[in-house]
Image 1: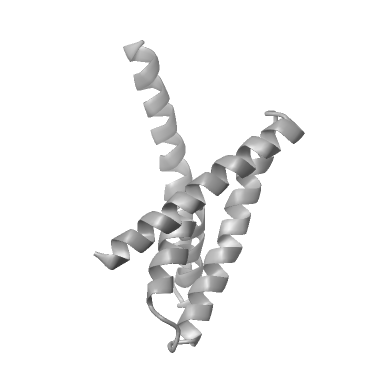
Image 2: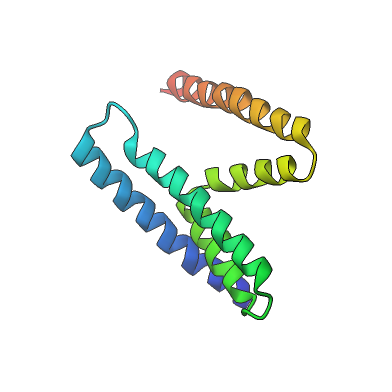
Length: 125
């Protein structure tokens, strides 16, 4: 139960920070280019890369940090970083084509899913 509380706390903080950064960026740069989302996704990649590697190398650190930071905080902040981490793991473990397939399918099917969801919402209006 303790791990779920840590995930929830980290997720709440990550979600609030994502909203704050997105809102500030939209106010500052306007809505034409998603500067806030781009910053969030790239910074989340940096955070997940650092935190997972750091925690893997320092096994003496309380494992609760894994639930709080990479799972909770980064999960609430941006799931894009998880996608990037999994792709990086494929690339660095010799599964280049699996990683490329994952990228291609995620991009293409993700865009199709967004289009389908949007069409469903328009059809129900």
